[in-house]
Image (tube, helix red, strand yellow):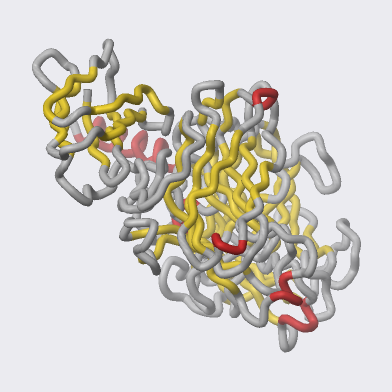
Length: 465
């Protein structure tokens, strides 16, 4: 019996170990060649053993108590994209979009900035190339933190480039001198959870979205890169986030989104969000709505991307009037018929003005607020809207609704006037619209199943069918 138990333990241990594909733990000599690029020598094959070396762990606490780590001396005279690299015996990985693999890297550095990783089959080769994978989840300087990168492409890997301070700005003006960045414990597995952190759970970003719930489209700390990120301007988790509604006039929501428009950023800086469910655009679901509150009179642009049969809708721009400034305004973007299809990604640019440049228009970073994102079949502007998100709050009790015994929706209108009622599915597509007279009415659901939102001008009700 003891022998059987011992064998089971061995097998169990082997299974656990098999979950992690070890790349390098820096406890032994480098497995093959290693070096730097852009630091300052602009040569991807530069075998620099001075600025990328093995070194004692500078802080044997937290998630990393190992004795030896890698040390990348990031030179102030180097390129902004400078990186450390090394090669190793090729490892075969199987990864797809639906079943990705995750590369884990522990890093300790004195500045908070973007960490980027790139893997290939060999140095200089493009037979297998992950491209640059970014991670903007660093929370503090001078502490060991594990960064995770998602791979969705199968192949053989034998080269890794770690770009641990990937900020597109001159190093000479951003840093006061050379800095040491420590790297350790590189491995691959099926788990996206960083070491020492709680599991993120399942992403729950849905449309329509009014940012009232715990899980929203904006979750920059936990889902940056996978579901959320920025375009062009340097990104931090505080650039786009959920905040208290600063003006409850014209928009009754308690919460909204906020975008930090950096004065030193490029004119076309923006951000993207990826809802859980794809967005179907057709003749009955072609109007993209978003409420915006900002202090500058400049264009707003949206683009739906990663679509089929067309890759994206192209820029769809609206030009706010002067009267729209300093108040909540609903902006409507009509998707042209030539761009009908299914899309999975939304790109949003809230200050889309090329000239004068942001640095000429602003003396400090600007805060732009946005809310109540949905796609429906109505071009009508929303006023005092609280959005059609699943967690919005009712502002009155004039309309009551519930599912009756026959599976239909029964509505009681306690007001003395007719009210327009619209029914949306979970991805924001309008299913029905009707005038509800005072008294009781019934909406035939015709076999609809799932979660739906019944919406009036001032309230919304979630109904499970």
